[in-house]
Length: 62
Image (cartoon, rainbow, N blue to C red; front, top):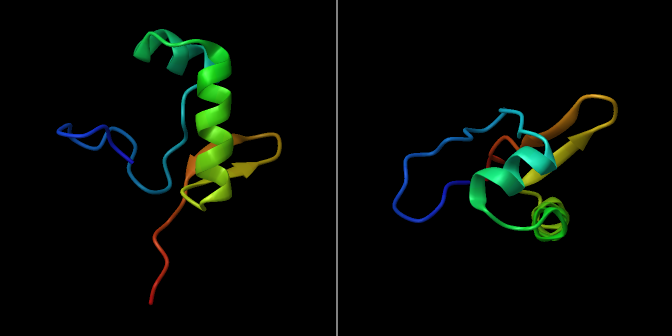
């Protein structure tokens, strides 16, 4: 889950920073981050763990 052309800052299993921290890092609004996280969760790229945060999903075996 890395921006195009960048090294992967969030490998599988890693926890994402808070939404506000991500918004500040990428210079976007908090609502933009919320929408992106929701979309990536729907796609199975991210998983939420209640009380722990949002994590990059482990790759699935085929």
